[in-house]
Amino acid sequence: MTKTELVNVIAAKTGKTKSASAVIVDSILDAIKGALKKGDKVTLVGFGTFEVAKRAARSGVNPRTRQKIKIKASKAPRFKPGKALKDAVNKGKK
Image 1: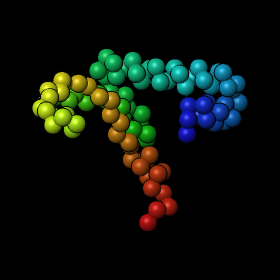
Image 2: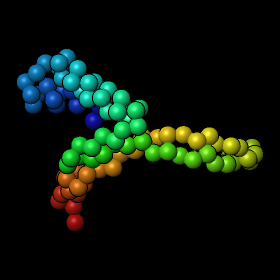
Image 3: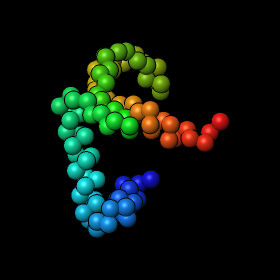
Image 4: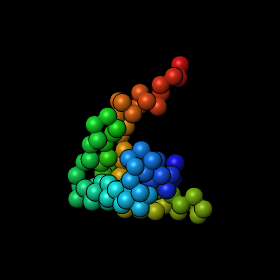
């Protein structure tokens, strides 16, 4: 599902216009990004948790040249699905 398809589904379910639904989707995504940028965790009960994971600096190997390289420490967003989301995805599977 693309962002446009998500906006269309929200517009259909809420009776709002597509442009109003797009503003809502953008606002939610901006709020999540802003919280993660500050280092906060975003928990949506029944859906999942967004958080920032820290990756330590490490050494690696350039696959093309086989030279050792240093990989800088970094941060990466993570998502851990909640139980209700896992159950919804796995519903009907045996």
